[in-house]
Image (cartoon, rainbow, N blue to C red; front, top):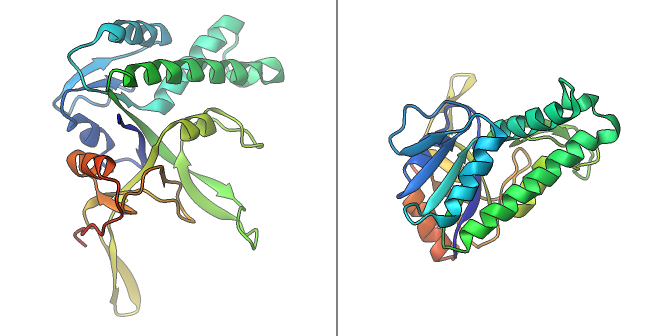
Length: 239
């Protein structure tokens, strides 16, 4: 069963390096930020260029994984294209939310195209930046800042972000396996290894449709092993 995973997190968490480590991957670089990694990659600067790439990939026999770096920069290309169609400089200026609705339609078409690639046993990995969003979805209705992906969503919870989260089988939060200790009266943190959180938490969104450990090392082969053998097992990480 091919993998369709969303990996998101703050800067410096190793998202691009993780994607570049995947065997036989083509990294689609939307933000000109992947020059430091060694893998096959292509730079995309417009919606039309991405459309052409997906068309070419229909006959792909070389690559076994397509990685998008990042989806929020692809969103920008989609917004720019829609704005050009309507002759405006900002998508919010398009009346009645038509710009956002049209952008969501484009995203759905892209997801359909990616699903088609998966029928050829290709894995799809989508990278995204993180942002904090204020939520009150708890019994006390307390205001909490929760990490989620940096994609458009309106105050009714509708937008490109929810569409993508629903589509993927895995939403993985990239972070550090930190440990905390007392130094006198102060509590200090010691950065651990990079890990992927697979289950949602009060302070971040995550999910896994297959039963895998709640925390796994940020390593492709380890992740794929759990994907192929979905049983809950304890995974040791360095603290």
